[in-house]
Image (tube, rainbow, N blue to C red; front, top):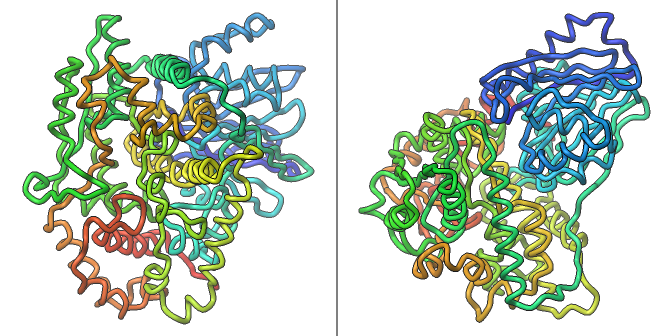
Length: 617
């Protein structure tokens, strides 16, 4: 795992001032040094400059980047961020075609795959990745991102010059790129946030290479192409055949993702999703004579203040310890205090370059920093709910009627926070509706499907393209800020594609949420763990944390120089501070209730202050 940044210009010869451009791309990459604490490098060719920072996971002694090879008398250079899970198979295929390898790292495999297959290479890759190739043979820059966007890649085009970076902060080092926020950006932050429209960078002029896309940049400009999309197809298998096929896919995926030359662990909540991943990993490592390390997360005071809800029926700690004992893992529970959680809010903004899931982000950042003290790679259970249909909105018809995103149905409450004169310029309701309509129009469907199957496909597609993308973005930024690589087995495109066509009655047999996954995992875990009701990523229920947030936001309201006063209605925020919150009534997802809204506003204010954002309406 790594980070990279750079730029391409096909109207100017960069080698004329090589050291000037080298210094610029190094400066851009240094803003991402948290992503790659092990080494850094830079490269300048006639039309492209690349800077790279490396977190060494495979073949730490070799694989320095940017990596260059010569073909057809010209150089091709790659800057790569990610992990390739089919590197061994792809390497063998490339060797049979005459390609020679000098390292064991997957960077060289990706570069040779590009040289061999050209623009078809992304379809050959199984993994999480974002990369840029400076192709001197064709005088073009090739950019690519993995199928679900686990690894980030942003870009902007200024005066016929393309600038790109793993994180937005790298782009702000490029001359002429300013942190401006326009009408669309405000609609993103307050209408959709902390989700974000695929391809949208929120800041004016900043874009994201969309998941499952590749792009070319040369003298003809920018051309972006989709290479992966979920496909609708009949599912001819019986239920027992589906269970067996899924089990095989899960075992193969976890086995692939255990590859590492550095210490590896799993996140273990004691819920179904992380327990299945942990059980498979523990079994495979045991065959090698190794003991798996596992971590669970808890908050100060939750044992006294936790209140069950339909979204969070019970606490995780006892379940995690039970699973650890069953599997024989080396387990540790990490604790986060109220003060650490409040402090992490601001760190979360810098990690993402945007307001995020408030303390849900910040706590993960804090926990990842603790995990990194002993491990470099972790596997987690993220993304299972999106592909198996575990969230409440899959099961409650009233939570999705096609008129709003199912995880965010109170736009009026969001709009009420803005100054009326700001809101009048936005048409936020129209913007959010347009984003939803665009997504629903893109849903792959089969002719003649029943209304229920169509609805479930729509929810599944929306979840994978929006909600899952939000969680993956959170996972990458909050882990990589401390140089920890977190892998997501359920996000393997083979599993996602397979399950997209599995009938809902198979995914939820007899009305049991994720019953298919439970049946596929039979024999790995005790029945009471397999049948445990879903409980999401933990959050604090300690009222002391809410008091800290109220105090911080009150201080901001009293300071007229704070930037949030430019857009928020002070009266509406004061009314919010006077409310008594229902922790079981989220305004986004399952976890973000009243206290998280206070935290989100704190993040917005700090975001505007830290990045010196100019609001341009």
